[in-house]
Amino acid sequence: MSNLDGELTQRGQRLLKIRRDSDTKAAELVKMEKMLQQTKNLLDKKTESGSESQDFQENMEDLEERVRSSRRHRRNSLHHTQMLESQMKTVKGELVGTLDHLQELRNVLRRSQQKAEERKATMEKLAAGLR
Image (cartoon, rainbow, N blue to C red; front, side, top):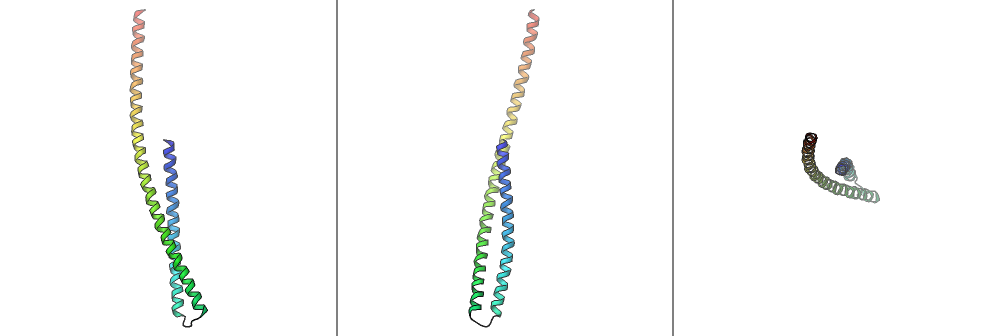
């Protein structure tokens, strides 16, 4: 049962890490989108063509790729988070079932011990009566 608790704790920690990473990536995505918009605005204001415009274009394309990559990573992280949450629900269900079963076994053991003690007491009375 401690293994299940450990596994549940470990999965919970992984889920928290993924959520933190997802939030971090979301913040980075917002920053990159803002940078992308600023770059686009600068590019729109730029009237002359040449190497500077090409540099801006390359920067803009790089930023767009980083934004797409961050979005993909966020989607993957969210999917992974959902899978972990589903697994945690399954493990919790299994733990509840195991706990119920252990409680039933404990009750059976108590009843068996009580009956054994009663039988022992009866045997001692019979033994005392035979003396």
